[in-house]
Image (cartoon, rainbow, N blue to C red; front, side, top):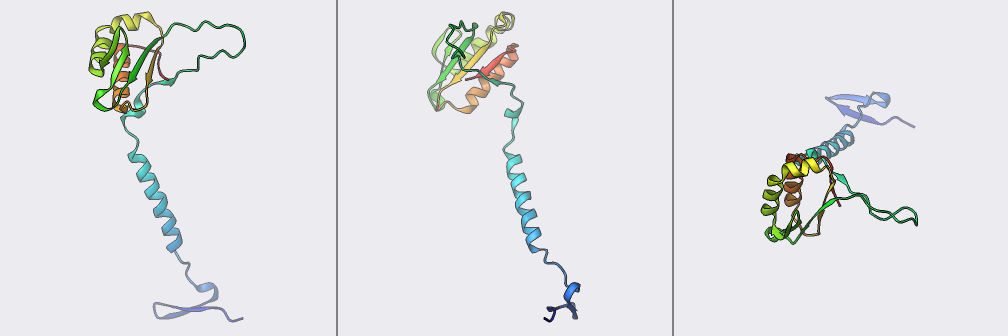
Length: 146
């Protein structure tokens, strides 16, 4: 068999003197670069929000279990109509809840009980972030999402 011949810059190259085709490698590098650029744009300030997922309250064994006291804040509704229940509020707008958290910051900090935020489907993500940020500013150390 004869080696394949090609022309580069007016010179004829044969066999092991041919240049490698860089197109596939450049394509792969560009795809990886675009992937990393697109995924880094999705990381925002919510990465800094400290929260944990609340455990299920079902007991592991058949023995009765008394769960520790926790303050539950339920967020329901959708869009601008999102409402909150908890801290003495019943179906009040989210800004009212934020004002109540700020007003009772000392009590929430000193009580030391866990606070569980339960957002229902349809509640804007920004409302959940605002509530978690208000709890953090109030000094609540154990805030979680369920």
